[in-house]
Image 1 (cartoon, rainbow, N blue to C red):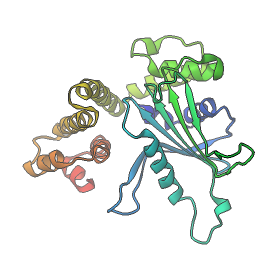
Image 2 (tube, rainbow, N blue to C red):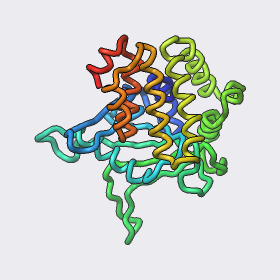
Image 3 (cartoon, rainbow, N blue to C red):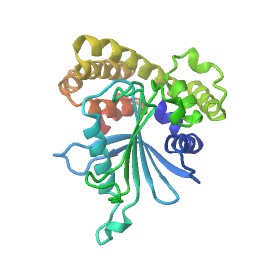
Length: 274
């Protein structure tokens, strides 16, 4: 649902402006962008990938549950983004600024901040700046330092944290109203409604299974279950396919398969795109 809402240029631009406290003329957006440079190395799937008129790049990731090594994950995502931003023969100064933003429905660092911003700094003196153009930010829907961040950002983060019933109230913010309208429109689409319901079930089960079995295994198990449920609308699944699904241990691969399953028209088409 988050990727679907942010696929709208105005929604994405409004979010970035609130998160980063900057003005952006316009953005071009890719949702669920996959970056795989070599089959032997780990690829990434970016929830929302955007660029603005200055060629600045933005990656936004929605995190419902706390994942291990979020800092290292953000480092890897940013490095993968850089791989396609500098063509052979170009100068390093042409490498554009980039932001990786994790929107977390939990406090990733336990300091009760709505926003945690990281840039490269010199340990020996504050007078020196590396100027590498990188920024990594974590937004926390459970923050408490309202006086340190724009009220527009706080309204949006409270909206994200709200449950289904509470999220429909008036947050007294024009941007939140705009996002609420987008959510209503997306839910009205039959294909997107199916996707929304499946992901809602997945998130609910992730919370339960995460407590019982450990976060990663619980997520992987429920992702496979949701994928199987989605594919069964095409009929009984072949044993070979079921075996492939059960043997896959990379949750990002399973999530990519889920997105494919929600767009194909037949089981054969899904298998051909795996």
